[in-house]
Image 1: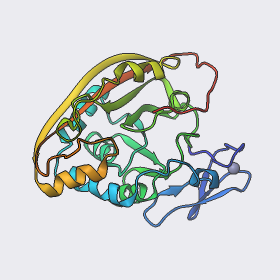
Image 2: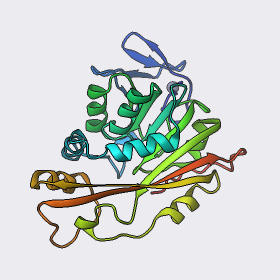
Image 3: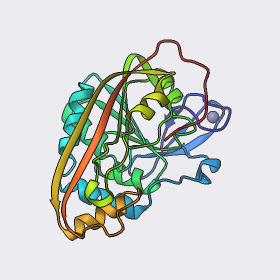
Image 4: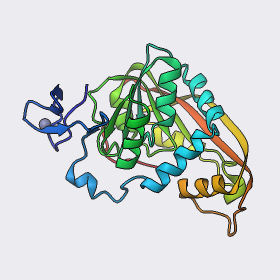
Length: 268
Ligand SMILES: [Zn+2]
């Protein structure tokens, strides 16, 4: 169900030996840890090259502390994940959510991200899922109607492509930072639910909303990791240690039947 990312091609990829190729003989290597590199030269020059290794490792250390488990369980429950699901995580980062959810629920997981350090970290830790290095802002490298569930967890959003790769009756779960997310480090932020819903409105309708919130008492090393892992503006002097709130607004969308005209633009 992977498709070729060479501009204007888009034909199905099939595996032969240690590579994937399309009928036009475009070929893509499979990495040592099983991930597939479908980035094109124009994607590598993207103005958003994705998470650097330092941010990926900081986030991994935080998830290894179990800090995000309550958020993960809220995502699992709202999405009603089952072993029958074929799941795409678009902008999967280090694979924590998709890899753990696939383990817990028996669903089949496919993660796409534009950051090479992130995809390598995901492929090493969660070999039971398929990990793809590609620019999902431009094109999701999967055939139409492949997935029963698309996840977009604090990632960039591409509504037309999310719609294209979802099966009829599928669902989309979008997680965005809630106003109280990291409030101790950066103050309260605005509510983003209306703008996110509007960005998806031509292709999706909002079916459910839930807020998932957890707090943790963090030492200085963990606070430093949070600061490395996020890019949003901070308080002038964020605390060196203390209680930190992690909070997501979870939006569950249903696809609208007839897709409107395709637009290549992605929104944040
Ligand atoms: Zn091709």
